[in-house]
Image (tube, rainbow, N blue to C red; front, side):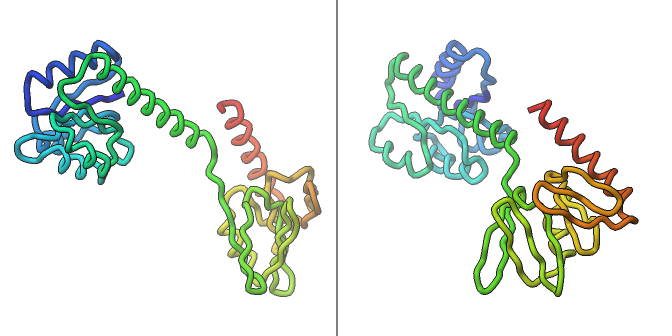
Length: 245
């Protein structure tokens, strides 16, 4: 956790810094004497205590500039005048402290900010752990249908039409299987010029046929070796991801 203090008064910087280290000694602390100095810094912060009334670039201007590159920054304004409080929310302030404030008030605001930081961090880890859902949009008969790629079992082509078989049913449209193959990615394999299969749903196979959870697909003899290699690699990757999740 990285916490910064920006105030043009040396005494205030020292006071806030000591309070932060006392409450959260594990945090990395950064201190700046002006908005210009803060903006020149290449550090990226999680929580920022920012004075509004500073010489040169004031706190509002500084915050607006910071927001361009750091949308999740937890911003806490420090001000001696309550009239600035309403402006604080224009730049997405988390909270504000009006001078003079008590130790109890400071601790309450900082701890709430730390809780928000932890929520952001948990959400980020969850998004990294969960694979992003991918969809395919098919147009047929003037209607656009969205299909979850993970639900596609296999596809086949005949008479210039592609038939997609999914866990929720089938959909047919005019198109090329080669174009669909490019869209679906590495989890799919062109086992035959007329078939594209999803490794996820393969149950068994031989040199001429692939049995899936629903339906069967053709296997071209010349594609068999590459299919086996890719299928084994797919299972290895999936097994590894499950063990580390």
